[in-house]
Image (tube, rainbow, N blue to C red; front, side):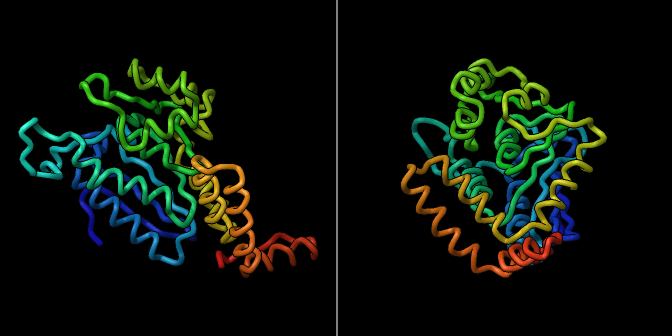
Length: 265
């Protein structure tokens, strides 16, 4: 597949997707989102991919939505005026949902700005690594809109109501170091260590057991689930995990006092 707004590579069990429209700070226009969706579907279909890294080229991770990228997502006339939520329903919401349901772990490597829906994309990572120059911004109030891309779901759960309200209502930048203190990201590293750190984490995930996919699924689902239902989900997932080749290898390696060699099966 030839892309114009993103770049992809696969090696050693790791798929890397790079937003590549640096002139717009990788604005998530509809054309870029089309390519991003195709790239993740390709990674999903590739059995060799056991972890995906998402990052941005140039000075920014993603500066937010840019609907001028390919016109409005819906042209249905509305006597009350344009529908700023149309593209959310048809493009952005299905995409972030697909990331939540992705079968293998996702690492996001955040460089520079992660604004608007770009902030949402960054926060969809299971492991989030931020460069010291990175910052997170809910800029919607500046243009009279509301946070989207799942931000009003993710932020209160990640950093609590008070800080989520502060980000959304005031629209101030949250620097990477503050994001780490708040629990918004997992790592804050020097800029030149961003990709090496992200790739090292991805390597750990890509050489892990098949159960890692089930683990991320359980944690995401726990954000909505009740106690008893979550216990049941763990029980069902454990049954499945316990029947994998990787589980057998892990137990045997433990008994033989050697490192396990997981195959993702």
